[in-house]
Length: 208
Image (cartoon, rainbow, N blue to C red; front, top):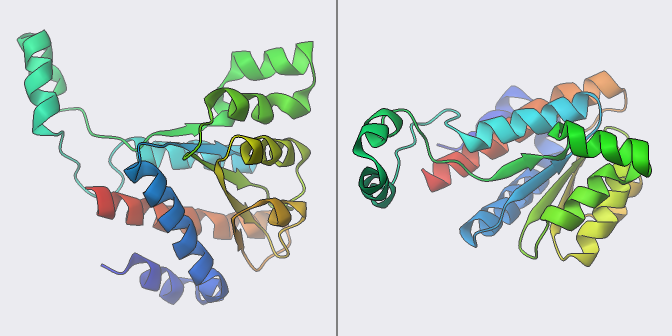
């Protein structure tokens, strides 16, 4: 199924970022294929988007996901009763971490050091070469997101920017820039959701 073409039919204004969406999908696909993970950073509504994306990737989104036979076999060896409960309920996930979701760590950084380093600190701790940072900022100028991309560069992560029109400063630090054609925050966010939904569907379709 051509999810990307369906997206453009529903949202014609996104035709100008179609190639960028596909490039972002390919980068994340290659990372997952190599054993990598996705780190997602964003503030406010974009923090909610980060959590939303992690939720779509870490469990079934729109397609049935079956546990691999090797996992089923091994968990039965651990405890057959527990396996009988877990196997029909669990689903394979694609590893994704929303950096906004770590309240104790983030508030410790805010209280003890500086709130603008929270995402950078996590990218430094979690990030490895071959991973991907998805940096979400409607303006493209969020300082804590920019600082995270700088650390991601040093750690050799691929960086995908999801922004509004123009891309802001974030555009120059990223490998792929999905700059949706709006400038007002709420309008940008309205277009971000279908963009990341289609990327999640494409990834799920490929791996499951």
